[in-house]
Length: 555
Image (cartoon, rainbow, N blue to C red; front, side, top):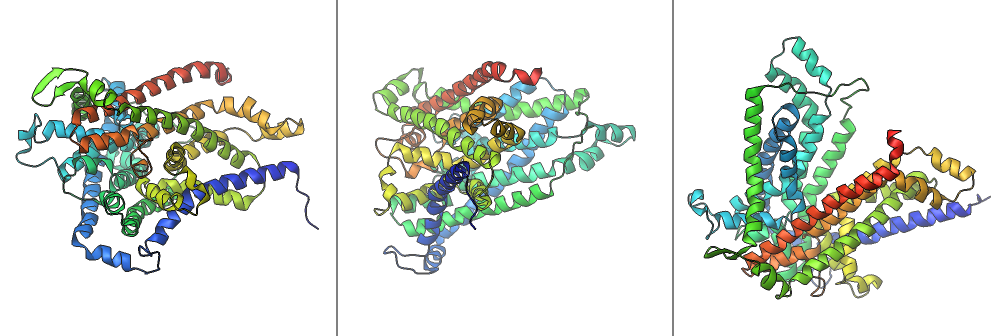
């Protein structure tokens, strides 16, 4: 006899089906169609591995694989030690200015990746003020890409390594010190083993980010082609979507490989801090503190110089011939040039992505964590929710072209609209937001829902009266994450915008390609300024709202 399904069970199953269906339609199908396209010719006939054979037979295209591997490996080798030493200085020294250094190091997250390329051209390009410092080495190529990527990925590695070095039991160092263990031996036997998983995770993030980045090579790469540029040129320039699908799969490979390694690492990860653990408090060592201060100062000067030059360039009339300060690039380059509309499009898209992303991610996570039944659907959703972490933006964007631009797709109407830009952004950054929401929800005892059910209080009332106020910090954090990334992203949306929905990050690409470096720098500056303002508003809003909704935490 068939079990009776309660109305609430049907409601939960319906929501789970909608969540699963949304992830399948907006994530799985676009990625799957790329795989299908790579085995077809232009007429849609199945040709097996012919596209792959043709691609690798082309020496120029084949060299892009080696170029991409070279750049990603070089950036990883440079960034990880640099970020580790920076994090080590922040956590293991008593140097002054720690808060300042931490803030400066995280600023690149608020800027589009293109900003570093534009700035370094002003520093070391053909008309750069320090062009003679390179001794004949061109900034247009691998050297410029590596320097620019260093700027972009440094904060991502730093955040991971700061966490790894902060989660240490100070008692280990106390015991080692009492036994007369040298500082070097303590570093090798305690610090490095405790941070090894953080180092591996940071290396995977840096390698994958650099491998898949499109903006930096496009701006400063010159004739040094990488895979991301090949995807763009094959799809947009040559309209060869089948070969672009092949390159997309190549881009997808290291991301999935890194994702698999990260999952394996997490399974082996063991807790390093017990309930009796003591926070590590560094002792004052004048020489070491001075050296760490000098080192962090060098990194900070580089990061500030990159941002500062972009901002400075946006106020210069004509680089490098007329260095008079002016608002011409904002007034004539953006406002009267009609380019400022792209900035407002980005604001609109970022706002919609923040609101829509929070609603989608948090409600989905709530249904997953606070209801029961349909375990098969839940398992499928959990798998789909972590897949965006391994899908590069360019691959997702190209998949959207193949899937949503198909005339027989009933969702074809969203193609070239603001909706598809918002949806692609939410999907692209879904995983981190989902994990944040799940972590917050797991901290709330399920007894709240059980008691509400026993008192016949509707689930939605418990959600709005209990869950949302308690999880408000995580909700605000997710909203900020979506907004900032929506303002700076270029890889996924570069395939999807229309003349009416051009975004600020895409406008920077177009302006720089046309030689309008000043207006491009002005647009990049506007993006950074907007991101900073949003982060300040987030801090203020968090402080005010948490006083009202989180008073129970201090009672």
